[in-house]
Length: 97
Image (cartoon, rainbow, N blue to C red; front, top):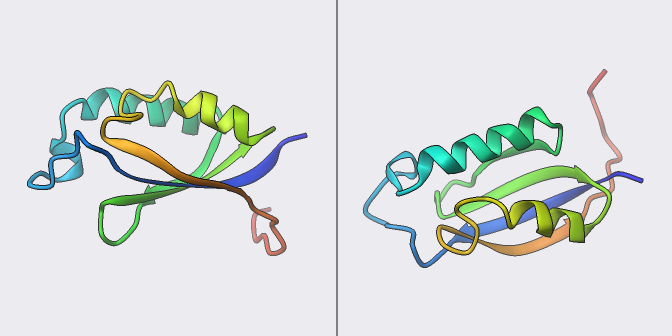
């Protein structure tokens, strides 16, 4: 059964702190991959946190293993982004129709 999970990622060893996110190497491939996950309904919400070094994603998946396996295919996985945590999220408030 699908559940919501919150994924926290942070910049990895290939992240160039002197460049904006869209200027990082491999940006187009990463953006295309993330857009594909969004279109597939895997990612519900996502984006960088205030410091632009951390990212939060709300995903809908069957398990943490599915999340790890899916995000392992991201061209930035392990280079520009590293997983910090994946936690189940119990939704108690939901304004979606």
